[in-house]
Amino acid sequence: MNMKIEKKYIPLANYFSATTNPTITLQFTEIEKIMGQSLPNVAYLSYSWWKKTKAPAKHYLAWTAAGYAVKHVEPKRYVVFVRIEPTNDKDNTKTNENILLIRPAGHGDANSLSNMQKKIEGESDFFLYGHGERLLSTQKTRKQIIEWNQSGHSLILLAILNGQHVGYLMIEGYKAHRASHRASLRIGVQNNSQHKGIGSLLLKKAEAWAAAQSISRLEVSVLETNSPALTFYKRMAMNLKAFAEKP
Image (cartoon, rainbow, N blue to C red; front, side):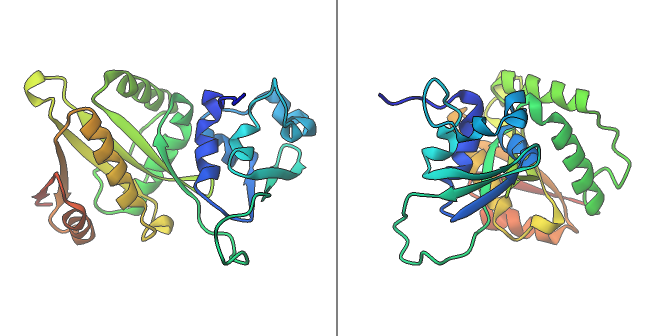
C-alpha cells in the first residue's frame, strides 16, 4: 500500500526529487527553511526519528521516495543524506550540484522573508527602500502571506538554493473584477545567488500560477537606468508588459 507524504514534508520531498547528488548535508535550520515550518521537537532530541523507515511514521518518505537514506545525524546541528538508489546518469562520479527549489511562501517563512527582503533591497540601488530604511516586521510579513494566500489573486514565491532562502517573487493581483486579469510583479535575488537561473525560474513559476488563476497580464515597473532588469524582462517577456520609469 502506498503511503502519502505528510503535507508539511512535501517541500522537502520536492527538494530531494530535484537532485541526484550522491550526498546532501543539511543544517536543521536549512531543513526548516525548505519546509517553511519547524521540525517536531523529537527531530532535535532523537536520532532514531531520522532513521525510521516504517509506518506509522511517514516523514521519512520525504527523502526515501527520492532514493536517499540518512547516513549521519549531528544532534541539533545537521543531517547527512546519501543516495542509495542508482541514477540513469552515466557519470556516477559527478560532484554535488546546486539544488534549487521554488515554492509558495507560508506563514512560517515570515521572519526569513522579511530579513531577505531587507537584505536584497540593501544590496541594490534600484529598490524604493535603501539599506536599513525598510521597517518590515515578522508580524506584518506573516499577515501579508496569510492574506495573499487566502485571496486567490496574489502570491509570494520563494527561491531556496541549497537550503537557503535567496530570492522571492511577489505577484499582487487586483480585487476589482475589471482588473482581475492583471497582476503586478516584484522580484528580488541576493547578489551572491544571481546568474544561476533563479530569476528565470521564479518568473516561469509565476506565469504558470497566473495562467491557472486566469491572469493574462503581468506588469512590472523598472527604472530606465536599471539596464540588467530591463534586459532580463525583455529576454523573458511572453505575456509580460514592462514599463520603464524614469528615476
